Amino acid sequence: MPVTVFIRYEIDPFKRDKFEVYARRWLDIIPHHGGELHGYWMPYEGTNNIAFALISFASLGAYEDYRARLRADDAGRANVEFAEQQQLILAEERSFLEQVTR
Image: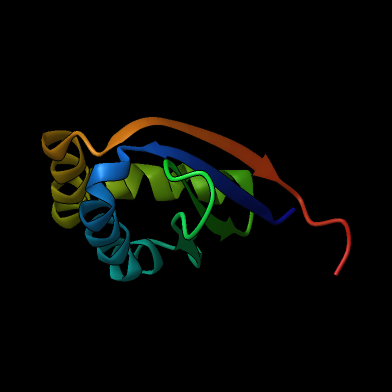
């Protein structure tokens, strides 16, 4: 069963530019390891500290395999370290969704 991971980020609103750098770095990394990246979204108007990402996988098992490959990837680890060093992500929530309509 295909699964889409919905990631909700609470970001530092004064570090939006750094979050955009972080998000853009995933454009090559995620697909390279098997995720179908639908995109990252940042605040435009209204709430200024919430961002989102959507990534799909063939199954929950495929997601778990992806996570293992990502942990072993130099570019992936470097991007996570960048986010931690910059303290731009204050909280992160993941929901696993299945599509019920088109």
